[in-house]
Image (tube, rainbow, N blue to C red; front, side, top):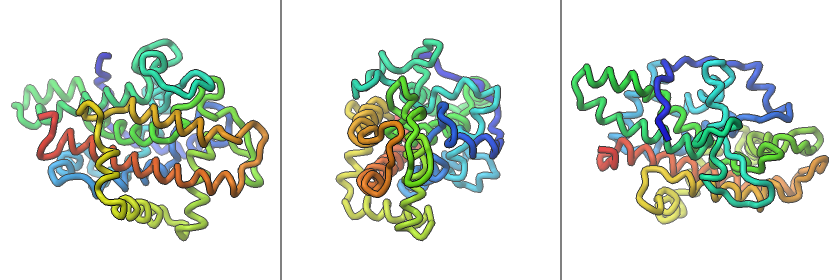
Length: 312
């Protein structure tokens, strides 16, 4: 698949009215909510090697103040703009209904049949673009300008960081007919929501309120502590790719559709009420996927930019 380049400079448009409305309508919603994406990037940041941090900070715009997490929602903020409409399919993967399996060649298309325009294709593509970082840093200005014309590495970094989060939300690898749960209307306790929004936002919000003093940072610290207490073995296992690739989104997507079938769709038929039983049994899945997303994002960036970078 050809690389996507020439995306232009990063501009942060906070389309607040549009973003706030997304979870209320049964169309295609975006992603983990803002908290899910912030959590993924906050979990990744402490795991970045010094050389990786240096590269990441060199790519971030000044107004980010060195914080990757502060811009992890950027691809959602801008995809409503005409210039970026083409990026909407990069946030998810539609799979055949009830098959509960993912296959890249079968499933990674946009609605117009363009192959590679899905979350796994996007991760591969933006990872490939970012392998040019060391070429940019080590070449004379003329070559550097040519590379910057072909690729916007800042945008590639922000898209990669965001979409690694997306692909770990199980319903971002969901069924085609319900758009990953977006058209399944349920009652989340006493109010209506679509199933996708429950997984994007509601489970995290409920957990923050009940267990983390309404603080995302407290929740992130607890998840990080669980990763640390499990020792390096689990994090190491999550971070590795089976064939030594820089990123392995097919693995993440295969896990996602399996979890969607086992947990997200199960007992969540249209009109059903999802309350404590659903919340308490699904929260560990949400927290585990946030942890995996953070660990894997850090591993990808370390392989791209770290002292032992595989892209050198």
